[in-house]
Length: 89
Image (tube, rainbow, N blue to C red; front, side):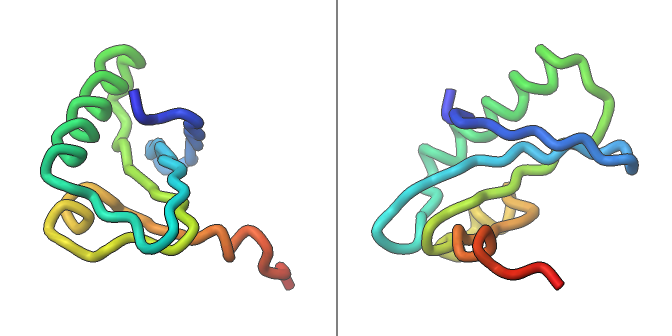
């Protein structure tokens, strides 16, 4: 499975965020093949966990995602590693 390392956050609004962490030299591109793998992994997570909650896919990448049909379909949130080092006021 690709959800390694995997972070799952459980929110009070009945939503689970699965966080896919990717390192790349430039923006990460979700290909047709990889999109199929992500769909399958999301389905396995739902089946194994038995959750009835919404499951959202979040990407944490070094340089963001390449916008395309697959990223728009599958990814609810994309953040870069830069966000990890921002000062919180």
